[in-house]
Each structure stands twice: as structure tokens, then as C-alpha cells.
Amino acid sequence: MPAPPPAVGRAVALLRELGAAETAHPGGTLLAHLQRVQEQLAAWDARPALQLAGLCHAFYGTDGFPVALLSLDRRDELAAVIGVEAEDLVYVYASCDRKATYPTLADVDGTFQDRFTGRARIPEPQLRRDFAELSAANELDLARVDPAFREKRGPELLALFTRFRPLLSEPAWSDCRAVLAAG
Image (tube, rainbow, N blue to C red):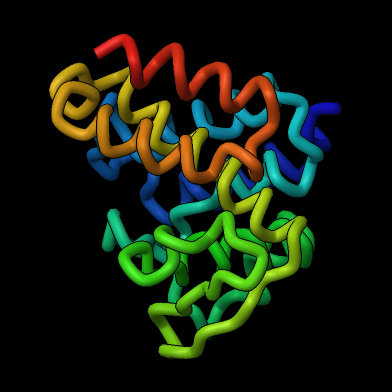
């Protein structure tokens, strides 16, 4: 089921207003990347909230992309556009301390480290799956549009997503193997 068109339209309008269409990113602009991530999640039949989170995942910056379009004290503005559930996923994605979180994310008792607050928590299974799926969509887009990125980071990402395998949908896992093993 695709994300609701009105929410997508409002999110894209806000992204444009905040400069995502002019922000450089591998494969063109940040807006183009975000739209490709959302489209990838839709192709994997992700639920609408996760698709919207994919479209907006860089609003607060990420551990790998420091440009923030909104400050954290403006989370309610994004929630008003895409909904509370999708905004919460955006926050979780942006807040991830990857070095601390990635090694144990697939473990039932693995902790998620918030880089904004410094707090660790054990996320619920659905949140683990959503985070893994969004991570895969994001990294696969980069690997598709940038052969040098794929060559340099492909083996490391394939190892990461192999660890995440229990959390990934079958279409996501299939694409991880196809794209990352291709290098």
C-alpha cells in the first residue's frame, strides 16, 4: 500500500521549503535521494508510515549525513505533516549512534544508542525491523547511484545486512544481495 498522496505531497513541499531540492547528495540532491528511498520502501510493500519515514529520514540529519533540515525542537512540525508514527521513525533513524547500535541490532536484547541524548534502550521488534528496512533502503540507494561508494562500502554493508537479515523483509534482503554482491 503506497503512502497517502496528501501526506507525501505535504512532505515534499516542506522538503522543498527547507532546501532539500538544493542540498547536494550522492546521486543529485537530497530531495531526489529521499524520494528514491521512499519509492524503494514502497516497492518492498512497506507500510505507509515507514514509506513516509523513508521520504523524511534526513530531516534531523543522521549519523552519516550531518545536514539537518529541522532542529529537534521542531519535531511537532514534521509530525503535523507526516503523522506521529512516521515522525517517530524519522527521529529514531536520525538519532541512531550507528557504531554503538549496528553490532547488536538484530539481537533480541541488543541496545539502541541515541546519539542526541546518549541514552540506550532495547527497542521493540517492530522498531528494529523498521530501522533495518529503512537503513537498507537508504544504503542501497547510495550503492545504486554511486559505483565508487558500492565498491568501497559494498562488502561492509553486505556483512551488516547479513547480520540484519532476521529483521529484513524478503524483498529487502534480495535487493541487498543483488546490489551489494554485484560489486
